[in-house]
Image (cartoon, rainbow, N blue to C red; front, side):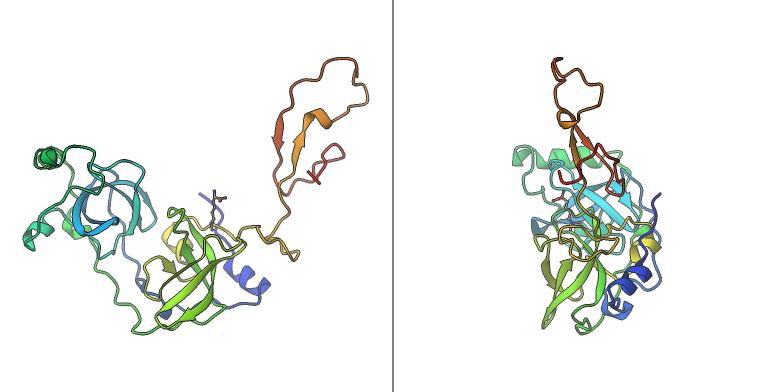
Amino acid sequence: TYLPFDWDEYLRDTKSLAAPYECFKQAVTLPQNEFKIGMKLEALDPRNVTSTCIATVVYIQGLRLRLRLDGSDNKNDFWRLVDSSEIHPIGYCEKSGGMLQPPLGFRMNASSWPMFLLKTLNGAEMAPSKIFQREPPGPRTNLFQIGQKLEAVDKKNPQLICCATVGNLKQDQIYVTFDGWRGAFDYWCRYDSRDIFPCGWCAKTGHPLQPPGQKNATGNSKFKGRNIPVVNTSDIQSPEADTSAPLPPPITVYVYKTCTGGPLVDVAQ
Ligand code: MLY
C-alpha cells in the first residue's frame, strides 16, 4: 500500500489544471483485471509488430500486465493494459488466418520453434477470452492544451506512471514532460496513446503514481525537496575522539530528505 498522490493540492500549488477525461483514450467505466500471473496469451512483439507471439503475464499492477514473450529473455518485458488491442486469447491469431511467430531474439535455433511452441503451450494456463476487454473508443481529435497535467508512462522505465504536463502540441501529437525531471524522459506521442492517463487514474485503478521529481528544485514547493545529504563518517569528529587511533574506513550514510540531521550532518554534502 502507498499514500495516493494529492492531485488537488498539487494542482492548487502549481496553479494548473488537469487535462479532462475526454482528452484520453481510456475507459470511462474501469474494467476489471482478472488476469493472473502465469497466464498465457497472444501479444504483438513490441520490437516487431508484424509478429504475434505467445506471452506470459509475469506481473500485475492495477489494470496493467507485465508481459514476457515465451522464448525471449527477461530483459524485454513490456506492459499492456487489460483493454489493449494488442493482446488476445490464445487461438485468436490462428482463427484470423495467421501463424504464431518466435519473438525477436528467440533464444533457440529457429528450427526448434514448432517444438518450443508445442511445449510452452502444453498444460499452460491460458487466459480465458472473457477476461479480455474491448479497447475504449477514445476522442476523435486532439483535445489537449499546453500546461494541462496528466499521468504518463515513463517510456524509459515503463513500470512507472508519473506526474506530467502537456509541454507542447503539434497536430495529433502532444509533448509529455515529466514534472521535476530535466527533460531526459520527455517524449512526443499521439493524443490517443494508451500510455497517458487523466489525473487520478492511478489512484482509481490501484497503480502507484510517481510524484514529481526534484531535478529542477527552484521554488520552495514541498514537492521539490533539497537533495538527500550524504554523510562521510571520516569527517565527523566526536569530542572524545582519540585522534591518534586509526580512522575506521569511511562509510556512506543516506539520510531521508525531510530529516534535518542535527549538528553532525553537513547538509552541504
Ligand atoms: N533510476 C532512474 C529513474 C528515473 C525515473 C524518471 N521518471 C520518473 C521520469 C533515474 O534516476 O535516472
